[in-house]
Amino acid sequence: MTLNFEYETEIELKLDYEPLIRRVVERSLDTENCPYEVELNIILTDNTEIQAINKEYRGIDSPTDVLSFPMVDYETPADFSHLEEEADDYFNPETGELLLGDIIISVEKVMGQAKEYGHSEERELGFLTAHSMLHLFGYDHMEEEEKAVMEEKQREILDSLEITRD
Image 1 (tube, rainbow, N blue to C red):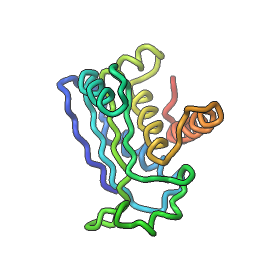
Image 2: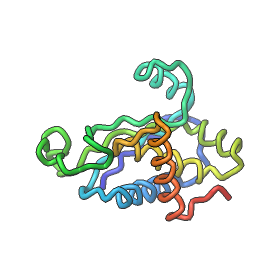
Image 3: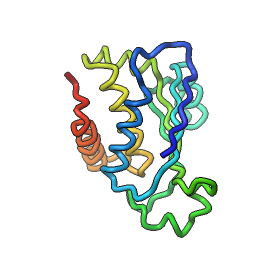
Image 4: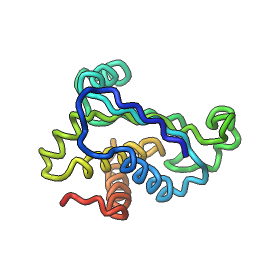
C-alpha cells in the first residue's frame, strides 16, 4: 500500500495523523474486501484551500471537512470484479497498485468539529478518513438508504479500531 501524504497548511494538527490515517485506510480496505494493494493520495489542508477546491469541482463556495476524488468507477459500491478488465485505467503500471483516488481533509474542520461534537481530534480525523474511503469505494449518502449503509459501515470501521466518540 502506498499512501502519499501532503500537509499543505501552517495550521498544526496536534496528533500523529499518518499512523491514524493508515490504520483507518487499512481497516476500510479489509472491511470492503478490497483484493488489491492500493495507492492513495491524502492531502491535509486548511479551510481556504478546501473551499477553493470545493468551488472549482463542486460549485460550492464554502469550506467543507473532506473531499473525495475517486479514480475508480464502480457498477455497485465496492464491486472490484471488473477492474482487471480495464487495468490500464485503474492500476499503476509500475507498482501494480490500484489507484484508488485522493482524500482532501481540512485540518481546521477536524479541530473545529471535534470541539463542536465533543470528541477527540483523533476520532474526527478517523471518521473523515473512513467516510472518504467509503466514497472512494463508490458509496454515497444522497438517499436515506445509502446514508444508512454508509453510517453503518463508518461505525463498523471506527468501532473495530476502538476510535470512539468518548
